[in-house]
Image (tube, rainbow, N blue to C red; front, side):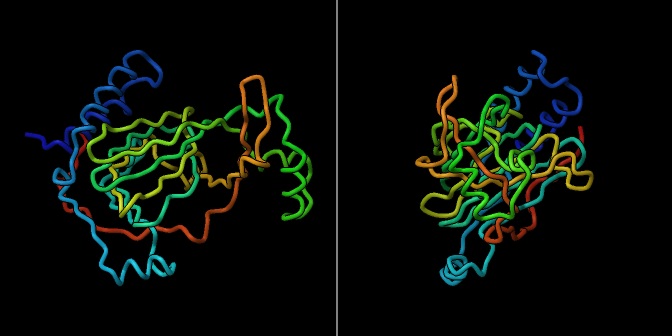
Length: 252
């Protein structure tokens, strides 16, 4: 008989490998997977995480990775793993291009700040943002300069614990976000479909820098627009790894 995590994996794999994205059947099955994922606990994946005081001190000094990743599965269909964000740390603003995600907290508390990308058509970068960029970068052609920025709308921050249901990320809504640990380390099971593809460059994680609300916003017919600048992966963020010791996963 399948264990809870095996049921989630098998249900997710069937969904993302066999059902057309966007169809009524897809949405129905996605809800079913989300319900199953919402029941997952740390015990189901034989997981527990704690840092001793010396490790935490090293984290605060920037000598130890702010995050840990536990690999459960990855192929062309989906990836599944456990992310740990250590106390006082965050996964910085990033995106999941053309990907669905399912996230279930199994330990601790996380604050999620998310943003939805907008089409830049008909929107102009505020002059003060453009000028600030030119002061910090080599002069750029207008076309290249435009590509460095992404207009987004803001969602209300949410706080999730192990008692909350799994949340779902779509290829559009809330696709840019950051994950911040609250009052200690947080761990969450993460399913991404399809996974990142850094080999071909088809789906590459992009990081962003948020402009302050004071000088980083403009207005459109849809309301206030925030402008994010694409940036290289932050030097302050990297991941350690841990071995997975829970039930094995197999393609259904």
